[in-house]
Length: 414
Image 1: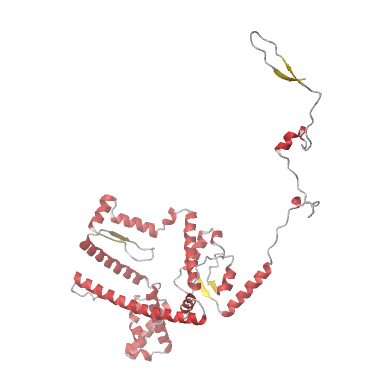
Image 2: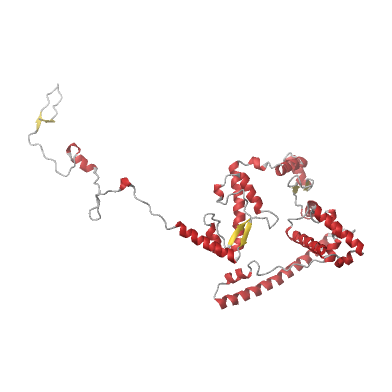
């Protein structure tokens, strides 16, 4: 993209610049793909030689420490020229000791005759300049250690460019839209802003019956005032935070082992012994157990914050174990399995055990059927056939006539 000067660029000039930049990116990516194809070919040769799968060789090639990132060397003169910007606060936040160190270096450079004489500084000052320059270089790649002022400037410049692009898009295509931007917390010094096209503004005022400034205030109160936590109940907040923690732990485990598997806290020692990885910097306030057993929202927030700390030395993360420590963990796991012993068998209850029962003659209680109960007199076992009573006869006795009705024969037992 050509730099904007006093003369504003036309639409055709910006379009041509975007086409050129796109072509450069595509050419660069094609060269990277060629390098990756060469690596894959070499991996295939190695896999055929050592009789291993291609995925195993590729995982070993891309393992941490195999391909080292080439860092750009820090120019000491450039680091000395940025001293004034460091003191103004345009780079990173400094402590009082670091500010005093920079002022001391600046005074020494003035005595020596300028920035060009930076190589004549003492060795400790050179080391300090290089370390701060490397820290700034790392922060530009991650964006995690930038100062509050630089973050606010970045947000302001980005929103201005988005507003210009949205207005230009509306003029070219007629697309309507709006964007609200508020600060994330009270410590972030950034004014609320809104970007909208003409019809989108009329929709907010007449359709939704809302003034943009009122919507901005409500959004800022929702974000900064943490009203979202009041909208959700306790269980919903627990589920939400537990999901984020599980995703962070599972992602870190996949990145370090290359296998997509769930985190089982009960089998953690087996996982350490098998793969040689371990979680470091677990918060002391949080018990190392399954998340389903933690019901404290305070402890879950501490764990989530420790998993997303910008400082990698203090962040809770997965790390590879040294060989000696890995071997010790393997021995500890073997000893734990031995101490646990074989699986215990379940014992038969005393009331279910029959002493008279033998292997030859198992005793089984015979249950009566409904047919046997009906066939036996007085509720006894009905194995014997029922005897007929010979002294009883069944005879017919005519019924006396009543009027003109016919007599009916009935059976009586004598």
